[in-house]
Image 1 (tube, one colour):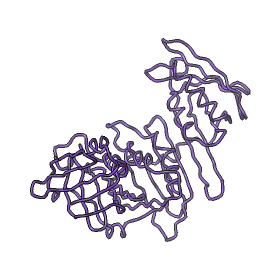
Image 2 (spheres, helix red, strand yellow; image 1 turned 30 degrees about the vertical axis):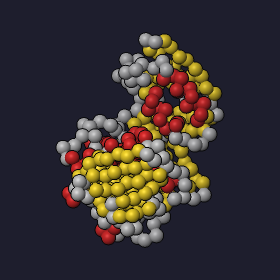
Image 3 (cartoon, helix red, strand yellow; image 1 turned 45 degrees about the horizontal axis):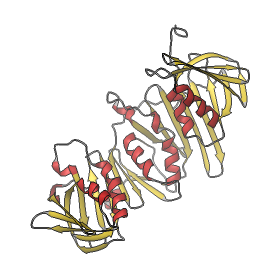
Image 4 (cartoon, rainbow, N blue to C red; image 1 turned 90 degrees about the vertical axis):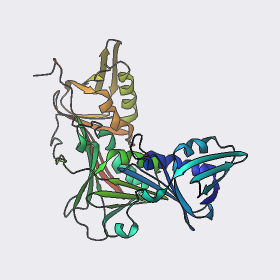
Length: 384
């Protein structure tokens, strides 16, 4: 193997692929990057047996083909190289890679790549179910729910994002919950060929990494999946992941059918007010209280550090006043960070009922329905 490439191109690709290298593993071969130079392309991949990322580079100079597994230290080396041009060549006899840039030379010892786990091939994907998104739409349908997924190892199913298409519907659902809050995104999905209903549970960690990488563009993003595996192709990257066992409850009907109080409020102003309240909310549960009186929303935060009290004028109000509800400030803030509309609608169901954010977009070619539910905190004041 012998290639010459731009340092910045290699640095960007190695940084992204590095996300699939395990922090701890007894398998030495997984601790590094798999490099493979063919006559047409240079492949960089990493695999932790749950997530695999492969990058395919075509616009680089390939002088000699070959493959090796190399230590992830190569990423640190690329960050420190002095020149824009990088030469990587392999010594087959010593199973060693030389990295040259300007007058700097590095040598790294590698591992025979024969036992390195590889992705399933394109011929297999052609037989799988598939979905196609623009990068912008992919980000929208997952970004609105991903923060509601659980990080609790004791709740493995809730560490995933449910992706579902129901029989006879042209709606795609994404849903996530940590049992304290629930986010549901519904969007029309026009299927050219007749598609069977499906229900898969995608690891939130995989989607989180992809969302960081893709841009808000019309660039095509392809998804291929079985009931066990998911492949996502974006630009020159291929992401592969095991799917979680589907033990997810049907939660789409959990949202209340009615409400006692509904408000329309400026999204940006509310977000900033909640951020200020977090400064003095208790560190244990970040609890704040809310009251709605006629045309005003009042937010309070009290802790051993002090007290915060602020009011915000509402754009609209329906129903009765809300005496007081206690909420986790971070849970309340999370959806506000992703809303693009000037105003947000929030529905309340008394002091002990769920609080629900609602967005119903009917823009041309961008129809969607989004709901986010957060449960109140029970205290001595409002508890049974």
